[in-house]
Image (tube, rainbow, N blue to C red; front, side):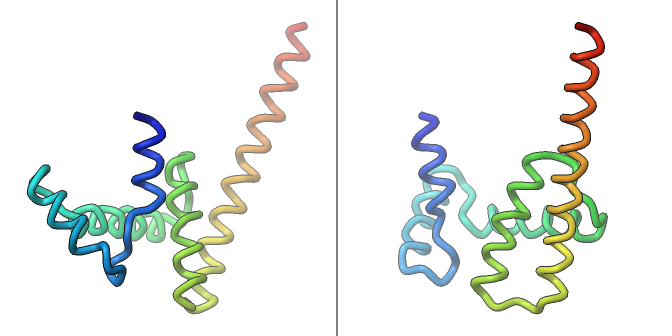
Length: 110
């Protein structure tokens, strides 16, 4: 089940792909929601993160990391890629500091 979920999420066709209408129609028939609904929610999440200017969780980190790949492939302006790149870097730095703090606390307890 996990493998299927990962496979489906990694290979979701973009709106320009030839498989997009087929998968969209199947999802609409089976679930009542199509790929456009999924992409709309994704773009809304990205817009909120961009407005906030900061990543809060690992899932947001993954979302923005994937979005960076999309932006680079689409030839997006450097300002936008730099903004998201700085968010990713800041999140990694905060995560590194948290890890170091936990490790230090474990050593202090021992």
